[in-house]
Length: 408
Ligand SMILES: Cc1ncc(COP(=O)(O)O)c(C=O)c1O
Image: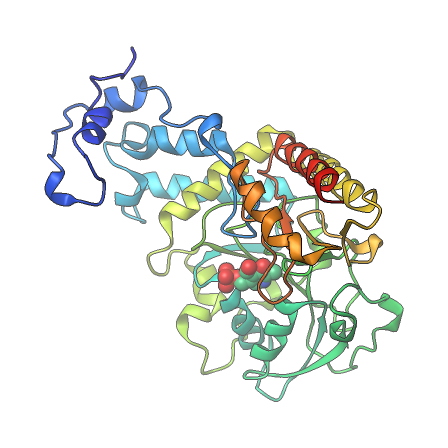
């Protein structure tokens, strides 16, 4: 059945002459929820959508969005949306448990690790990590600073610990990852902190250093679930969801269980891993809808064949984009050292920097948006997370070649 002019959705929109003028809005009663969600064709399809190269919140898989849309009004016959459910009811418990078990399957998380679904963004983890892993604000910890995010993490850690920046790429404009042999880790350091992928600078670890302390902590916000990771090499992995696995509002922490339970006395309850672990991430009201969305993304990643397959696709996308940049005879440039270029965030500049505004404007006209580089570095940045289809990168590369031909 087509919903053409008869569906409640269409009627709602037809009655709005201007969506921002409430006085012109005549409410129409919606009688049958089940009919709406089982029979209505999708309200969006790929032709309606742009290729969104934003660094986060970022593009989500189209099939996940459509599934969420179909389940929005009445989740699987429960008679309500996920947003309206009690977080302690059996429906939501099934959602959060499945999300966790699918994430465990994807990353092959060993049983001696807990998975926590928290709030506060990865930024809250900049504080939570030293609060939970250090016995006092005088405890020594090591930080490797490869970009803006690890820099912020190290600065926040100063409030709750004594961090040493044992390596910084600042003088080389954050284009490198150090050789692990050059890292002079402190003997008494409680952990070694890294940012696995610097979202702004496009620098990504391809392997991980071995921490002297035995505890490696990684901010994986922008390459989480983009490739297989040996979780057993880490004490803590944390990530904001809004790049690869869901909407903003969910922060995922994967932590070795023996590291839980030693938070400093003044740690706020919401930052204490023990509280969240003991309560299966349900100590207080969690970001229910965001967790549900993450669950749909995890299912989708498993259906694609798991993270090995996802990595293969990500490598292909990155390869064609970096080749276009490197093959442009200097028209486009990526400043990052080749061996550590990110598969997720590709920063590049134009030799003729005065054309950058035009590049971004023309790309947007072609439905390729959010290509402006971060305000702190300028230039362009294409974020090509899991959900960016190969077709999006191919379209960008074709546009880049055409732009070059017209402006070289
Ligand atoms: C690598 C990295 N760490 C931390 C953050 C901060 O995350 P949030 O905004 O979720 O606090 C970001 C945000 O973009 C990020 O890319």
